[in-house]
Image (cartoon, rainbow, N blue to C red; front, top):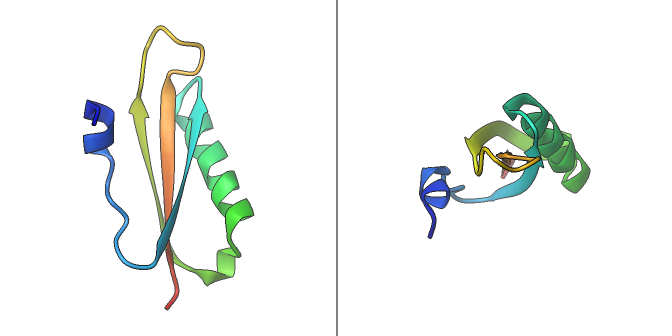
Length: 73
């Protein structure tokens, strides 16, 4: 497990998560949210959170974002 993996929050219960990469944290966050919206009906989400980490500053897409959605039970 990498350091980046340990920094991500773990979704608990009935949740879904998607990952995306980008050249900056905002573009990675946006793409992760769009992918989350494509993966599940947004009205079935109780809450959403996004976590961004820098993976490798020397890559073209150094930022990785994970969007978590807690599903309504």
